[in-house]
Amino acid sequence: MTSLPPEPPAPPPPGDPPQAATTPPPGTIDAESKQMAMLAHLLGALVGFIGPLIIWLIKKDKSPFVDYHGKEALNFSLTLLIGYLITSVAYVGISMVTCGFGAFLPLPLVVWIFQIVFGIIACLKANNGEYYRYPICIRMIP
Image (tube, rainbow, N blue to C red; front, side):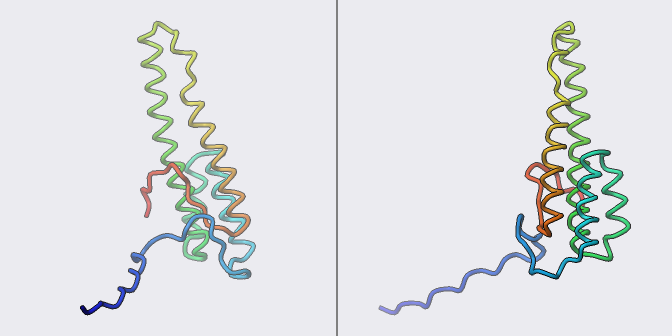
C-alpha cells in the first residue's frame, strides 16, 4: 500500500475583505484615517446615506482603511433606507387593515434602533483601527 502525502490547505479566495474585528499592525493606520472612518459611520447613524457617501467619495483613494469603512457605512445606510421603506409601507398597511389598531406597532422604530446601535459599534471599531463588518447588510457597493 502506498500512502499519498497530505494535500496542502487551500488558499483563501482572492478579493475577500479583511476579517471583522482584526487589528492591523500598529502604526499602519494614521489618526486622520481613523477619524474619517469613524465619521463615516457616525454620519451614517445620524443622517443616513449622504454622510458616508460624501466621506467615501472624498477619501476613498487616499486611504484603504477609509475606503473599506466608507463602503461599509454606505452599504449599511442604504440597507436601512430599504428597511425604512418596507417598514413604513407595512406600518401604514397594518394600520389600515386593523382600523388604526396597528398604529401601536412602531415598526420603523426597530430599524432606527438597529441604525443607532450598530452605528455606534462601528464608530468604536473604526476609532480603534479595526475593520468592522455590519451583521445585517446588503453589500451593494463591493
